[in-house]
Image: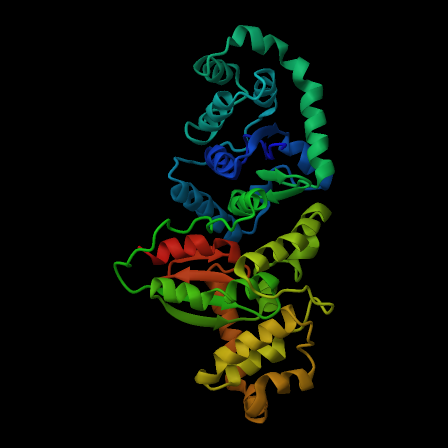
Length: 405
């Protein structure tokens, strides 16, 4: 029987690739798979798909702040040291070529990642390469003069990554599928073993929190990621004992307030858009919730969101859950009064009347303005204890870790 293989596509310039590299060998061992290290030039991938070479510098301030914190949170969850070099990104071409000339020696790979993300050393400087190669047991004098010999190999590998649809690092390849990001390692493991792997970032064991935490959830019916995340909030609250504060907002209004495109997905490179079409289904399977991308996307969620706020408190959860599922699992039209009437049931007439009041309209507007002021830039956004902001349903593991302390 042929042994399964796990490809790990990386470039030293990505902090998430560094974090993932420290766990991928154990993942392959658990899955009984052969690990194949796949160096690629991330800058070459970015050029091919039209992504800015200094991606971090192009982010909106709120998103840049979050991503800087997110990077450190993943490192903490993995129990590894990580710091962002002041001159990031460093040139990595020569370091990658040197890696190829050592036949992708794991000791060399780990050495270059550590040099970059622990010691903040430019990995393609000769002094750094000499130290890494020597420590890994290689003779730098026999490798460094031959770096050009690996030029075509690195180009070919990068072109192969592009052909696979890879748009970032790290990417875990299982057969003809790849999973992007160290936060998708569990999907790769499941693909190799057929078994559900633990949620990345979540504590290994349930612990009794030292205090009662609060979890604010900023959401809008119009986001698929918000739907997937919101389906998990009640279970998360049960596991951690936190108090949930629901914060409905208008995502389009938030985007306009902070200068983002009305439909961020449409600004992504084509390979990333294709990937996320599969990724959403991966997550719906993992969460065990129904999902089918609607034919009416994007949708105007203004009326549906106002109706939520127009309901009495005790009726909101049922309406919220039913409305999310109606749109994201059953392709119902949230702008259709008949659909909304069905979802609201006996509350329909009173809710419609209340939704037209300035009180409800202002409440949604104020929540949206609050979101912008507090650094929210997408949905779902989770804020723990009024301070720690987490964006995305794929950060629920990290949220659980924070709520378990």
